[in-house]
Structures are given as structure tokens and as C-alpha cells.
Image (cartoon, rainbow, N blue to C red):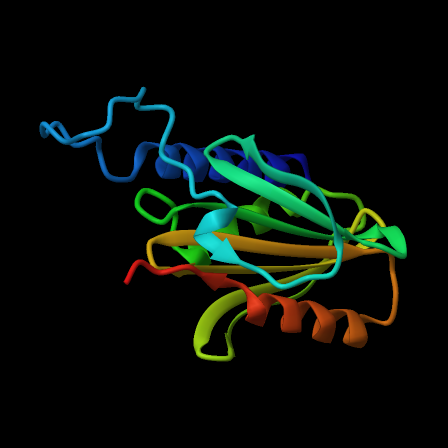
Amino acid sequence: MIKKNLIWIALLLASLLFVAGCGGGESTGATAEKRPPSDPPLFHQKEYDVNTTWNQETSDRKVGSYLESVWHDPASFSSKTIIDSRPAAGAPPPMTAAELSRAQANWLPNYRERSLKRVKLGPRSMIRWAYFAAGRDRIEYFFEECGTSIMFRGSTIPLTFKPFSEFYGIIASRIKALCAE
């Protein structure tokens, strides 16, 4: 068991190092924006649109190389919606991002995977990952659109899984990256 855990840790670290080392380098042209290489451009909420009547807790809080915005159900702080966004250039593809998140969540108490698959919501193809861990039902959607990499996460205390899944699927289908015309 210890050997298996060490192998998972080594694989996770190797994949994180690989992803951190990948991506487009900074342009050296005269029009290149000057910023440290460790501080990639971030896509703020103005880069995507989401329709929700939930209360917003945070907007565009910097977390690593992406920005995180969080909403909660006005009737309960236990149900959350989180959207992480960043430029797609240099970000892992949606399936790779889902697999990296899955490797991290595998260590949470009582982790139990429900599914990891490609789904079509409206006109867009996404990666949908559903699981239970640490006393919460969770669903995550990963997709790229118009140069924006988006991860949408929903979580709640244990409820009937089907209504929870359908509700977050509707919200995920309504997220729209705002494309330059």
C-alpha cells in the first residue's frame, strides 16, 4: 500500500512538473507585454459569462496561475459554484487537467469516483468528472473556448446525486467564453 501511494505521488509530481514546464514561451517581439515569466496573463470574469442568482463570495482571486471566482447558494453556504479561468495557451488540455485534478482528489478521505467522461452540453464538448470525497458530492467540468481555459466546479453536502448532477450540468452549459469578434 505504501509503495502504491509513493508511485502515485511520484506520478503526480512528474505530471505537475511536466505541465508547469510546458506552454508557450514569452514573445520577444517589440509588442510583447513585459511581465515576469512566472506571471502569465490571466482571464478575468470579463472573459466569460455565467448566469446565476447565487451570491458571489470572491471574484478573480489569484490562485496559482489562474483566477478563481466563487458563488454560494443564497439558501445555504454548503452548496458552492467555483470557476477557475486562465488563458488556454500554456494550460493543460481539458482531459489532462481533469486527470491531474483526479490524481490530487484521490487522496481525499472517502474518495469515490462516479465518472470521468467527455460530454456534450449544448454546442460545447466538455470533460465531466463526478466524485464523492470528504463528505461532499462534487462535479467538475473542464473545457476551452476562445482561448480561455475554464474549470467549473460544483459541490454540496451529500444529497440525491441525480438532481445535484442535473443542476450543475445546466449551470455548466450556460457558461460562455466571450469571444473577440
